[in-house]
Length: 367
Image 1: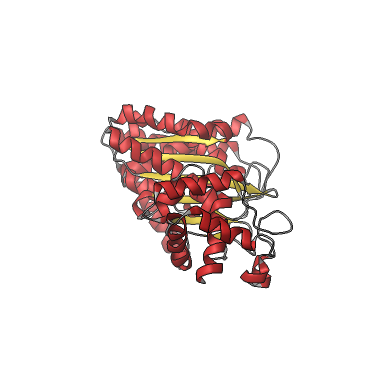
Image 2: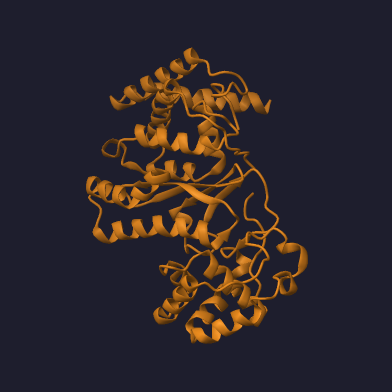
């Protein structure tokens, strides 16, 4: 678990400038020493990412660690130099992600078909975490990191009641966008009731939802009208719906917009749940209604369990565990940049020294 409460204020310019330098140096060394693929794997690891933000000097327990770390990496990483690009960001910037993917595709000379796949991955990851996982955390940050090899990572974050939840995706682990697709989800707290249609336990419910949409929508509407005046816990079972994020008095209401989306799904005739979710207009209400009716009619319940499951080197912005030591921070940047410059001209001794130092510290800790 990583605590991510919302903190007021912004990252001081002096710190952000250093975060750009240090983040860029760390990224380049990982890419040089291992590969672009390994760099993406590490970003997809919630614990590595949290540690990276801490090493770069941001608050270990702040929601801003996500947005500021990714902002620094976006500024530091040059696609034409490292073959890696960071697209998207916070708020309105996130909506420019498809355009930025297109711009990077021109730099990497990616095929139009691959570009379409990357744009779809960006849309689907955002939609799944807003629609298929109904935990009450509204996404406000979406970053899409891709390599010239076509691999990608998504790091996005949602907010609820001044607490944040971060979602990690890695392309090589995504066989389906709707079946256990995440490499990790970190949150400060476990919510009591979360509709998780991506869980393994929701497999039968996903199939039933697709079957429901493939039939005449009037039949589905009949079932919805039949239960709309019943409280959810009458047929879902008491305690596990106490904190479901729905308007009081917890009834199923079929809006015109949801009805129109379900009619569109019937016309489209989706083959699987991923195709269903991809349909424009299928949002949280439609997904929730289908899941509830699926259980009511077929007895195939979805998962209602929350899917959510550091280190210090330079202090933290707010002085926790101690203020950032600017002199030490600058020295770290200089050492890493010196090692990078040496490696560029074939002198890899400094990088080898960093490796030996790491191995020595590991042995020292073990003893």
